[in-house]
Length: 83
Image (cartoon, rainbow, N blue to C red; front, side, top):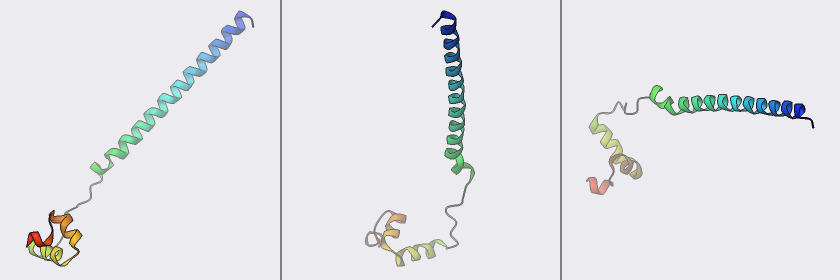
């Protein structure tokens, strides 16, 4: 290969590498933006969590008459310990 062909091949290789790096940077930026959007979605799309229409007494009664695991999950202790 002559030196001019080598230079042309090297330039083409460098240009291709530069183009690939640009594309990779654009894809990384797009992926990063998408990841940030997905991670912050719960902070913008808020759904009320504690919106029961029951009064405190009705809610506790519902827990006491319901499933023991739900009672433990909500109160952090078992029904006999609560009593």
